[in-house]
Image (cartoon, rainbow, N blue to C red; front, side, top):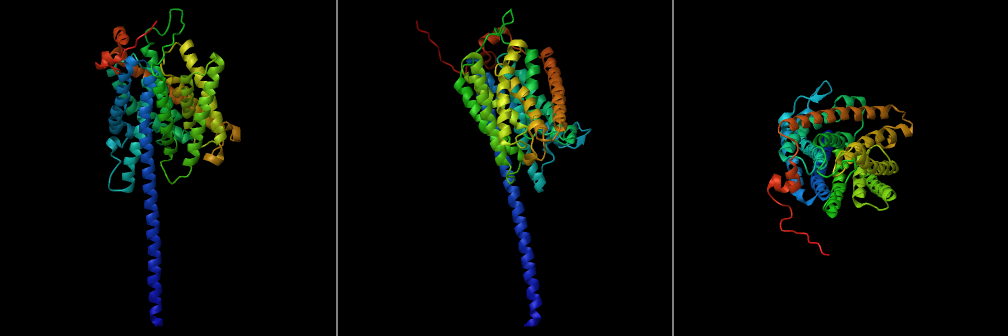
Length: 443
């Protein structure tokens, strides 16, 4: 019997080692599955933000342009998806060239069903394309009620194929800003400032809506037709942001998603409250539309530092953004005389830049491994963030301005005054959003 003992031991060892290998393989497979499902679910949440943007923009503009707003939000995702599939994803995440852009991976050629990494590329592309769509759709609101639909389609192709992916490569795709250590966890600059600065270029070249400014330079309010619809849009966007920020971990096995969800929510709440108080003090009424934009301002501002700051810092960042958006909207309208019907430039451009800079101020090592200016990290991270904000502004505003200028001089950017008076639903799409409805007045 003794002579068989070594064989029993050998068999037991084989079974034990094999069992451990199977367990390790199962754990790895489960982790991959969890990460993939989490990333896709986050992508679906961010996709739902398209509905939020459509509701906000429609509610903040007039009824005669509602179908046009819906079409632009539908088409910038549809057109943008194809453009990002063909060109944008490769420019953003392809093999680096000079730290400026990617050179392969076009047509999603990096994805394959043959390997785990190849399969992951499908999920990662899905997550990234909804971000590209967000950057594109931000512009719709700032250029609402007077832009040619055909011109907007051309713009959507270029921002999804080139303008946005180049910035994405610089910061997320291994480009030169990534090399400097810039932090933009979920895209205050990559997504929101790109949309905001593009909107600024478009609004300048497009000019204001009819009746927006008087000869003496004073501004006339043009109220939106449906504030409840805009409020619904903000709640949808707030909900979708829990895919936007926590989803940027692209790992459901990363428990830091809980911290990111908390910082995201607190910043939004603080932004809404701060904007409400600011406008209330200024004009004696707690304006609903400004409080709604305050929530969005807080969300945009926390998008860059959400994984690197404490909950208390998130409240401070959101509150500052809430005040900033009110002041910015008034400055852009009354001083610069740039007509932005929904406040997109202020919410996404200005507050996106602020949130990116705030990362260099409020970051804490306990949360993201880096200390900002207020926590003993010195000024170095802030200077990196400032470099990123400035360079992205120069690229995005410059390239978008050139693009819109070319469109303006060739196919035309703005509808005629007559078409604007009729409304873009009739003139551009041959329909009414609220057909059969009439408003009667009684004495």
